[in-house]
Amino acid sequence: MELQVQGTLLAPINPSSYAKDSWITFAYIDQFKLSGGGTFDGQGQVAWKQNNCGRNPKCKRLPVVSLIESYICNTRLESGTGIPIVWWNPGCWDSIVHVSYCFSLRFDFITNSVVQDVTVLDSKNFHVNLLGGKNLTFDRFTITAPGDSVNTDGIHIGHSNGINIINSNIATGDDCISIGGACEQIRITNVRCGHGHGISVGSLGKTTDEFVSGIFVRNCTFYDTDNGVRIKTWPALHGGMASDMHFEDIMMKNVRNPIIIDQMYCPWNQCNPKLPSKVKISNVTFKNIRGSSATAVAVRLNCSSSFPCQKV
Image 1 (cartoon, rainbow, N blue to C red):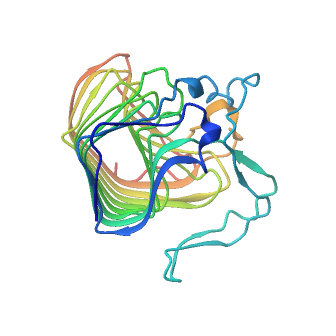
Image 2 (cartoon, rainbow, N blue to C red):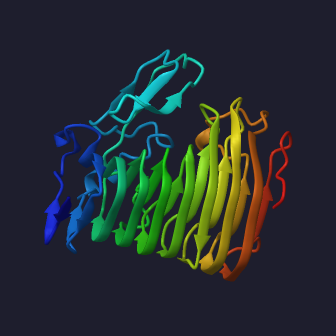
């Protein structure tokens, strides 16, 4: 199956017009291709000032809200065949969590597929959210939003295996690419990132044990980003493991924090800083990373006091 988008598609300006938490969703498709040189314009300007409620208690939340019910235990996510793909056991959450998202594009359980020659602009929140993908390639993919557009991550990957992002340009107000838990064999090659917050593994370990392995970032360039390559975990009761991560042949140009391991990641004081991170980081290489730092400290490795980094 191939869908060719030519011209520009405009998202509804009012996010309450979204049927769910995303503008367009592709789900449960094998051997799919999205191409055509077209543009998905999220028209997100109305939403950006409402995306920082974690820092600004007076902000008015977006009207699109996904409710995660309290006391969730042993939740199973299936592929449609009855075979469980993801198990969540956050230990019976004892409070209700409200998450407000307006993704432009969602790819849920897409396998053996390609997204090529497509542009995504000005999403209200994350531009692309990828869940349960396998053998999926983004090629010549462009994502653009202003540097001050809050929470407009380029591509967020979760619970996926065999994802390739190649020959692409991403400039947003948050992470160019973020890699969440339960991801394996993620390859990012020849990607230009900037502006934004760089490429991140994590954050991991906030609400459940999380595992990541086989991350390869090669031949990428970062321009005027807050961070370059970053691994971030929460100081929390939950653990996990992040291993076999390799960052090679990377150019940094005026990057504030080119190389970071941060195992005390705690934005907006949403954690207990007295708890060490329980995520184990191991087998990490930073090789042939060159260029310029916008600050005096170009490399910061802040590992867990309880589970020190190994083989970095």
